[in-house]
Length: 186
Image 1 (cartoon, one colour):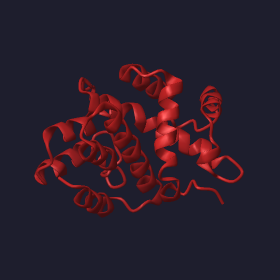
Image 2 (cartoon, one colour):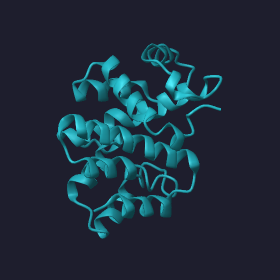
Image 3 (cartoon, one colour):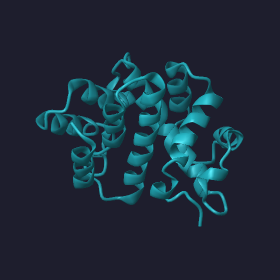
Image 4 (spheres, helix red, strand yellow):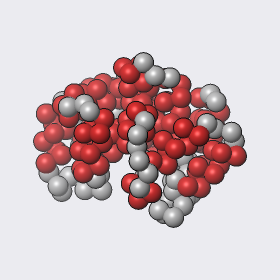
């Protein structure tokens, strides 16, 4: 299991730029948390990179992420990687007992929300996004309404990290790849 193969798999199933950028952002956050927790950075990064790889072609709850899980099994990915990816889908009602599972769930929606906050800034520069701005926008139910705030709250609680700290940590991870995310400013 290596990033190059995971990236090829991602690009085989995902063409939409927004979904690719989301995968890269989740990968960055997962790798950063792996470093923080002393876990396998490559494995955690691959989980982030591939968590939605099947979504563009198989977006319905009866398909995503189960079709992707089958593909990953056929390709010989470890079961803990597959389980973490499956467990980020609430509707599968899988227990997130491992730290990798909890972390993926905690960063997935937050990454999307932080991206939305950065994109409404006049120069679209994530470097200027502050934790307070993210928290303020979280309270605005009309802003980025497709992002599930309950998932963000639950994921943060399950991870056991205070919300401000979690937002700052994920924000910093994303800032590290701002160019790749198209959030380095205009």
